[in-house]
Structure formats: structure tokens, C-alpha cells
Amino acid sequence: MAHKSREVLENELKEARTKIVVGGTYAHYKDPKHFVRVTTLGFQEAIDKLCVVYQDLSNRNLIFVRDLTFGSRSR
Image (cartoon, rainbow, N blue to C red; front, side, top):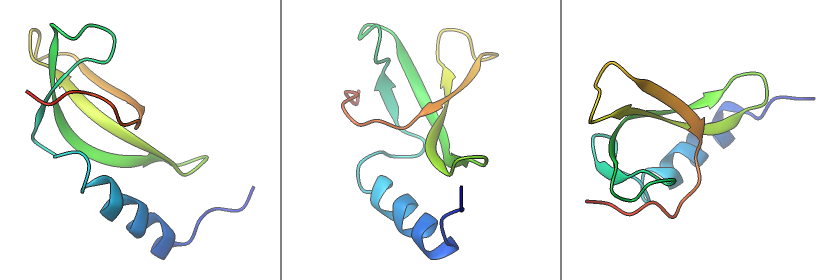
């Protein structure tokens, strides 16, 4: 599988940043009463999949990475 160009990756990040705020607090997609803080956006290197890195606000030692999908509710 060919990788996306740097220009395409930059454009995907730019678009994602119009929809999600790095440093923002969001309701967790599985439990809307549970909140997380977005720490950064990035790509799963092997497949160039846009991902979000977030920290669990009830246990700050827990850091998660998942595919970025939109639909989370901001707090």
C-alpha cells in the first residue's frame, strides 16, 4: 500500500483541527458522562489513518489512541 503524500497528511490534519480542539475536553464516545482531554492528533504510520490521542480525566495515567471519528460532544 502506498503512503499518502505529506501534503495530503497535512491537509487531513488541518481539516481535523477545524472539528476537534487539541487540549479540548470531550465526552467519551462510549460513556457520555465520562470525559477525556485530547492531547494531540496524529497518524497510524502503517496505514496513514488519522488518530486522536487522549487522556482519561478520571485517571490521568491512562492515555489512549483511537481512530479519529467525529461526533463526540465537547464539554
